[in-house]
Image 1 (cartoon, rainbow, N blue to C red):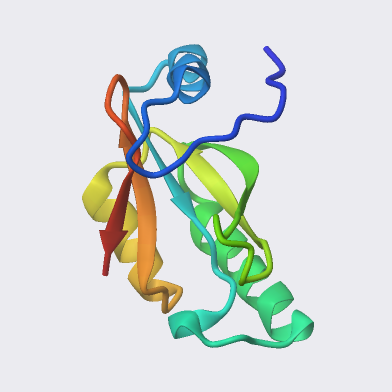
Image 2: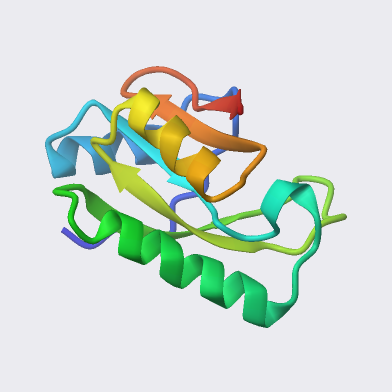
Length: 119
């Protein structure tokens, strides 16, 4: 099933995100971006290299991945490309975020609001 753009917010339940997890046959998902390590703006080249590194780290996994983008609700920070990774356990998502030198990830369990997980 193709999904239209799904917009979800930390702390707010998302029927669209729950539907995506149902379709993937999972009960959890993580949003991880490799961009702007440690919350410091990086060049487009550095962010592209970080995205390739994330894809390399995820290549041997069994998780279904969806192209995603993190957006600052205040609009003060540029959008950051990332992945919504269906089925990845929280501890594994946290480890991926740390490997990518991120300050946080977003983790969601079906039926619950997505949560910002500070690393």
